[in-house]
Amino acid sequence: HDVHLELIKRMSSPTPPKSNTGVGRTLVNFAIGGVSGMMSTCIIQPIDIVKVRLQIRGEAGHANLSPFDVARELRIEGGFKAFYKGLDSALVRQATYTTTRFGIYLNVSQYMQNNLKEGQKNLSFAQKCYASLLAGAGGAFVGNPADLALIRMQSDGTLPKEQRRHYKNVC
Image (cartoon, rainbow, N blue to C red; front, side, top):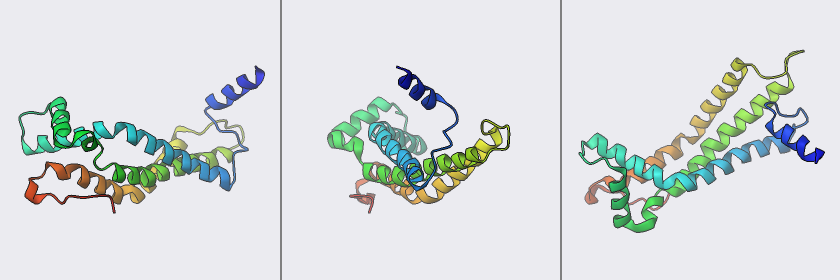
């Protein structure tokens, strides 16, 4: 029972234990970001494709901006698979952007946590912002090409048939 309480206490602590260092921990921090991002993408992809279609319709001046109508049209157009068009590019995006962003943030904040000034227990707001800034910039730099591929694949179906590029996959 005490072991469980200690585990819960460690997991809910805002500061990671100082013993979590080394190459293995560094790689785990990147893996956590990549796996969590890819799992969430598999769940959210149908909503995301409807959102992209609605944005494109809005820019084109369509009167009907109902997400339910867009979802119905997607289902009629391509069945269940239509909701997952561009999933491979979305997964590549997560494998690049989210892996990099989470990995940088967790490792930088962990490094700063392990090198706090005497008497300081937690990272300051400014230190957390600095770690976030580095992580966001690194993730954007690495993930931008995959993000572009994702948007192109998702929006291809909204073009007139003669203008479609018929992307098969992210490569």
